[in-house]
Image (cartoon, rainbow, N blue to C red):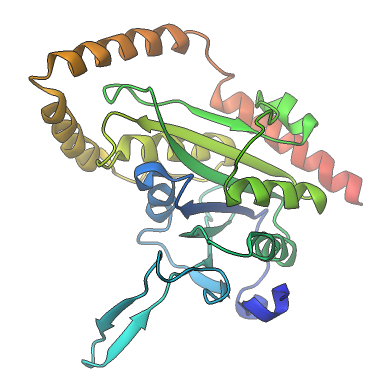
Length: 291
C-alpha cells in the first residue's frame, strides 16, 4: 500500500498559497478532552474552506473501535459517515500566511503510510512548516490559562524559538511517527502541546483550546483573536467550579496546583512577538538556502 492508493487529492483546486503552514490535530491519544482538534475547528469556523485531499479511512481504522455512523441526509436517504481525515485550505488575507488544516482522527493501523500522506500534502502545497497540535492531561489548575509548550527536532528552529528538543523515549502516538517522517524528508516540524486538568477528565476545556489559538496567532501571524470563546470558557468554568465545590480534598489539591503554576509562570518563555520574528527569520533563511 502506498500514498497514491489511499490519498485522494485535487491539488489544482486552489491557486498558489501565501507562505502556507500545515497544522495537524488528531482526535485520540494526543487530544485530551478534544482541546487540540477543537482549537483547529475554531480556526476554520465561518471561514471559506477548500478540501484539497482526503485520506481513505478503510486501510487505517479498526471499525470495531472507531465505528462509522449511519444518518439520514436532507433527502431522507440513509448514509454512512466514516472517520474523516480531510486536508482543508483556508486563506488569511488579513494575516501573514495561509493555513492547511487536518483536524481528523488518529488511525489505528498503517501509521507510516498515514504519516507519508501528510508529508505528501506538505510537499504538494509547498508548506514551509508542519505544526502538530496536541493536548495532554496534566497537573494544571482549571482556574489558570494553561501554558503551551513546544518542541522541534530542527536544532536551529528550536534554539531560535526557545523550544525543547525531543528527549522522550517510549510508547508514542501517530504524532511521534509524523514528526519522525517529517525529519526524514527534510521538512521542518514543530510539535505544540497544551495541558488540560487531569482531575476533570470528562469535561471540555475551551480555555486550553484558546491558549493554543493565542500561540498560533503570536507565532504564525494568523489572526485568531476574532474568535470569541469567552462564553464557552465561562460556561465550562462554572461547570468545573461546581465539579470541585464541596470536595475539600480536591479543592486543596487545586490550591496546590495554583501555587505551583504561578511559581513556574515566573520563568516565562520569550514574548510572542520575539518568537514570531525568529520564526520569520528562520523561514527566510530556509528559502534562501533552497535557492
